[in-house]
Length: 255
Length: 322
Image (cartoon, rainbow over all chains, first blue to last red; front, side):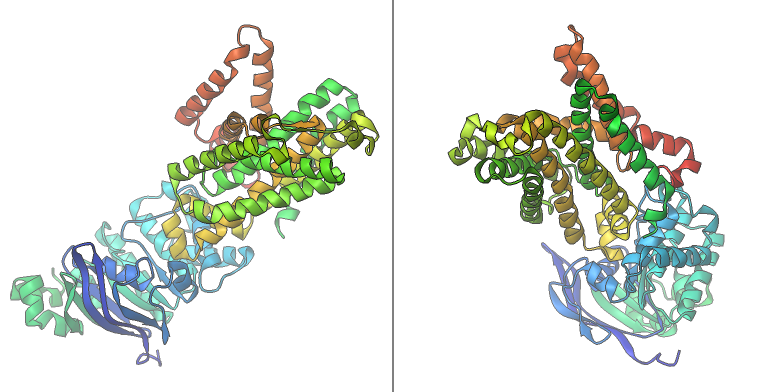
């Protein structure tokens, strides 16, 4: 990844208010091309809201979002999809009455490359194979189990051939084997040069996988840096991890 | 276009065409009258299926386009002696234009709110035509005999109307099939399954829905113009008859929501059943009750309808049976 240093996404002073609740409080960050950027924080810290602002589900109350040098603040999710932003949902959202293949084709058809149906089908089959769902391509998406639905989400996002992918807790609810499989998939996605933003609660996973980690608490940024720096950051230890020993255990991958 | 190479596409059209020509071959006028109605209902049900079955937006008041097309066509034929085929086409385009304008605000509504709004639109147009004296007000309009002279008399006009309906049903079903198997159709079904997820995938729902609503208004409107041409009389009541819309919904549900052949099968089965009930002296007043009851049973026990049920039972057929 030669272009590792070029910035692909910049968020400047973004706030999001829902009535009286300040879900995001002047958050700023920048993500480099080709990196895995981890976002952590306690429940309700505003992580998913941040994703929703990035891919246009909500316009920010204030602040700007730039993607690949273009101001994309306030654009709709489908506009961002066309510009190469794909995402998975924390709570899986399969198109239940469509088959697995049709779900993934929808990703390919309407994503960045805006492919015709025949080409989308070919790409869908490749991506379904990549996430290991080939045997279930003809099944209705509603009939999959949770781990398979997570893979489907991933496949659908990848089929769009995105530049950047937002992964919202793709590991949640998976057993250790499934987690290991999914981590392999994430690494392979990174190896394709796709920039990854991921929200995750599974600490050892995100600490081992991420190039940089961003910590949110009550909607505000409390730390940013390499996994090492973040784990040692006094504010993180105090506000989020609570106990310095826990931080040590994260680094050792035993938490 | 891959769809045009699909054998099932041609099988449906040939079967439907053959079926429609039965009364011509047998020469029976009574059969032709029955079939005229069945074909019209197929058109109505298939059109509703495009917006409801593919896109997930239940258009209760879809009959409004039948009435609008009927009025536009009738007015042109009566006042300006426009040829009925051209008048029907203009009726279809006019109704589509109205659908486009109505659709932009109304399709922002979701679920029950959209369904209610479509009923409101139908009632509003009915009230408008009832009070608009230029188009006959509550008594409506009727043809001079001179109108039919251009087509060789009323009998020939009836025959001509039947042929027009046959062509229209074939075009409607072909369009429905092409939409279902297209990229556009995949976008619609994504909207039906989860509009927010579809947006994130890159589908612009507002644009998809308005286009679909506009298309689905065209066919019932042309059918309305043909129907009232043959009828020779148009009144607000029969033109904007809400219960016909609801019956068409029952046909869609009965045959199979979201399938191409479902509305066709549904129209035949429902209309045969209704014919039977209406001619039975004790049941003749109960046909709407039975329609309502049938809808209840389908919704409770056979949500997918006849074709949907077959598709679920025999997955091997899924590739072919649309």
